[in-house]
Image (cartoon, rainbow, N blue to C red; front, side, top):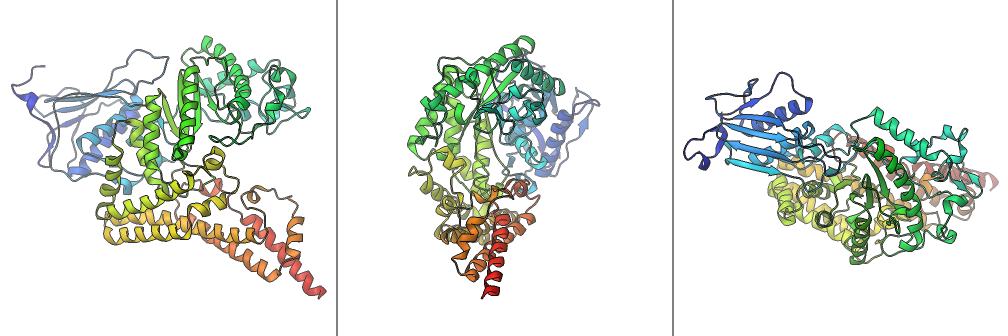
Length: 640
């Protein structure tokens, strides 16, 4: 195609003076990914300019301005990571081609094109988080540009709500092509115990059905596991990897064959405190890594023979979080390295976590990070550390990590900076943290940007104060502290709550009544949830001061729990004082619960908060205690 003289110096206009000067190609028969990309491109350009670009079914046009075309040009079939998520935008005076290697990338490529052409941003899910500038012209420079994400697997969620899924795609993220996380409970369902008890762990002299790991030395276990893998791949042939992650319990098999060559004393010493992680250490847990990954390699060898383009994915987690000694991991195994960068404010923790990653890189080719940006132990309360998120992603990319997944619950009303910065840096680690953070605060919140920045700085400093001194440097403290309520009270004392509220109220005054005001209201609702949660926690801590057991343990106690302790405790107390304190706590939790229900469908908190945080909500225990206290008061009055 011959170009007019000087055309290389002229921009290619898609819209000029609010008039369409380009056409979008959409064939009659096209995939859902193709259609989604075209519809998104037309929608955003119309929102920016008021102009709806016309659509044609002809792949070539003459004299109607540049034709915008989405193309698929498959590359060579790859059986190794990274996935072929790169795409090219070739902008010429008469044709703009957006070329991908697989159709699933069309929506991601369209969103990246709009970020370049229109400066579109999606700060958080839903219409309120979308930021599309108002423009008269849309143009692009002539030339070819290749886009290659820094991580081949990029996801902050797994199976997200639709609005959250749209936000991920628009920020260049993709779902993990795997079936699940912890898998042993599905590989060994309870019903299998009657016919094959030998597949289940031997614990204290007997086979355990639930909870249980598997007995790696049981006759027939390899064939059983491989049959499971084949069934999963038959049900969903599009999966790239099948999970072989152990169950989320500690009950590893104690039979002689499984323990052969291991130091049995080490098995019972897993929870020795370790500065970096909270339990165990390289010497204490390496034998369990050897056991888990020796079995993983055995299954991976069979998988490679029959399914050379498929992978196993296995956590590096808990008692098998360190690499095995004297063993290489097969290339068709993906190590899913569990960690959290939110503790990197403590230099010792950061150093040890990086050393663990480097150790895994020596034995495994494919590593994907499992980052706990959200966790039920900190029930969607702010843990603001966006700079640590950016630093960690730069570090992971530099050390050769292939993918990144974050356990994100969707609580944008409380943890927006962590999630937005993660989405930006997981695509491009060369970005500037200062510029990205400034764009979030000032572009998203306009005249309230400085006050919003102050609000996040207050919360960031509160998290630093809690984690930098080392008292929360272990993963068990960061993810699963022994007394959550005490840690949360340390994180958000009254002074921090007051300062953060003042900063947000200032932001609300500056934002006005339009779009910026509604976005600050979004943050205010998230902060109100935080205040209500902390108020409820305060009432429970008052009960703990009276001698009640820490409520972190109480919510998951079963209905058959023996409450004799509380009867003895209450017997020595003024019943009226105890009943008053219990009623205050119940009322505080109910007030919080009512507010949470009002936030449904607004992307402020996760849609699954109510179901997931039952163990954090102590109301069932409080109600039972109240009934005991009232019963004892009634009996004492009758006896008196």
